[in-house]
Length: 367
Image (cartoon, rainbow, N blue to C red; front, side, top):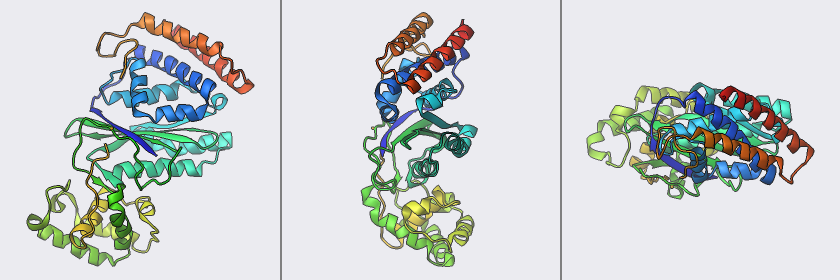
């Protein structure tokens, strides 16, 4: 299920090395403690909670209000758990930019190495990205995608898109637990300070539109192209202001036609199957939605689906600079807390020992 959405200012740059080293150490300690005490499913549930994730980022000392929190926190967890994944039975794939393109290969790698059924995880990774990039068109282009999963196939997805015009970023959280449909009201809690006009095809009000779009792909491509061109030619008369785009500016009819030719003979069972087809992107979905609404009267939803704490300071000095001595004490406390845990199964204790060895190496490098 879609558990939440967060909108934050778009910031560029990287976390300073001195901070990221500590973030990796503390992130691995906290994540290990949660897995040891409560199990991987509880950790995945917390990572899918936008409020917990935001507070966790602040706990690690990053900016509470910037887009960098998403990429840095997920990166710190991934780097911090390297070498411990098998012992904790927790795995991380994906990341920012080029790293996001390696997501499926990383899932396959862990699947082969750990004996995990990878196909469903690969599908979850692909379809959640498709939904937030094509089925929910809120003006944010995805550039970060990370999936966390365990041996049982439970997963959580954290991904982020950017709107360069508004200089804002939006983060999307997903959880496998309780998910009944990827394309029918997957959101359970969506929070944002900024809401806008959104083509929301996963809203319950878009059910008829979702049913119509696959049917439109089965029509002769020439017919759909003619309908689209008629919309472009009559744009000033019929285009309602609520749409995010103007067909005459944003949709290329010839490119749309080439896409239709490729997909005409493709068997499309439903909307979920449609958005999963290679080559079907946001512009094709928008064009089909416009045809469905303005030619056939089937209107989709345009409702935006969009729903903090400090412990050691913040990277930019807000509300105060990161206190490195306190930060290192927190890592020591977490280390001792995990060490004293009553949960001492063989596999989990191996993971804890690996954590301690990793922490000692990192601490030496920091000092």
